[in-house]
Image (cartoon, rainbow, N blue to C red; front, side, top):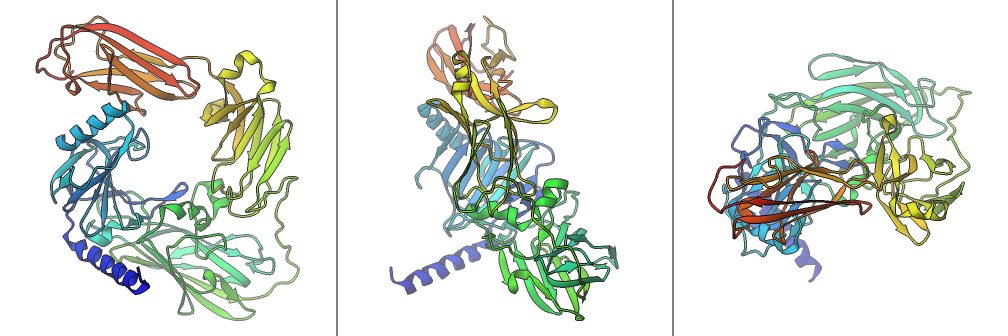
Length: 566
């Protein structure tokens, strides 16, 4: 396709999406209060939508925001749980996550697919003609499925590139008359010749509130290349949740040198959030300081204005007035004023990076052998060069790096020849937590090596799991009469590596078990299948990540008829 046709098509697509913005209806018929905003800072990612409160309840009707068709259905034990993806004529995609269940038509469609695949967890892409929906149609009901720890609806919009978009820019309105709040402001010397208040380390600035919209920091003495950082949050009406901001802008003597806006981002680059924040501070205090400058290894696409990457050059005996402007989507603004006077001090001790015997060079595969263990950092494991600390003994290893974020998992290898042959089938790597609790790390046994893929630094130990999972019926007893029952419910789980598979059969036919990992609950709905006869045999098989298996079997008695749920 010629380049000018591509450009015309792109502009036409953007115009169509924008034209649709005012026509979207709300996904819920209740006032919208948020527990999470678009672009909010989360662990290793930006929040990709709006978390809408559902009045502490499950089962509220969820509506299609416009005409379209269901083009993707995904059900998983984690993540968005039960999720629907609807493509609209403009190219917009709306996403509805953590649903309790779908409407009857969609539910029948996906159950047929689950039974065919014999799996609760599933992802399918229906054809355009299979599941059309109308604007305002009930497509499902709100819930708490997946990685949700409270009833709410996760709602997203995406564009043609599958990039998340800010739903507030597309007609989803939330009452907000409150200004952003500032917790703290920091100043950072950015090279060995710069300093702030005679320090070559980051400095927390003294700050006071002048009025409802303006904070003022004490004047600072600085020299060289410096940067500012801010810890801030936003509030909406009728909600106490501390949410993310829409826009942060910084001006130096009236010139905008930094601005980022949370309108769109790429899932692929979202992990670079660790370069946006002061990660060493976050690692130590669990508070996120947003850096108002851009590191050379930061590939986020949220920036709209940058001069010198937001870094401020402070010269000797010159005055600077820095103003940070914080905005939410509704235009409520807060300002932070930071007066700076340039002054050069002699004889300051420059900061020196801490080193260890091990150096990871960014972009290069780094391999370290310590006490028989092998630790491997692949070229894209980190963001920059760093020096990890690695200490090991026979069955335990500690890998850490002060103030260093990881971009991807690294590898730990352990020789199985060190383990008694009778135990090798039960060995795995575990991360040690508080009170000596062990957490399973994805591990692979191949030939004479155990290879694990940790996603974070910490202390890891060789652990063994030869115990089977557990399973027990919750709402019935073996040999029971179950004619009036709508559901069978089981408590099931594994105390070490976790539950990996769960399958059940009635009279030898596979049945669908819905799995709620937060409650260790397995549920079967008798309405899925019509049984023939009166006496039936039930078999449930669960396995953990080491392949240990537990089987529960019993007969039960049931006549097919409509009855109340129990």
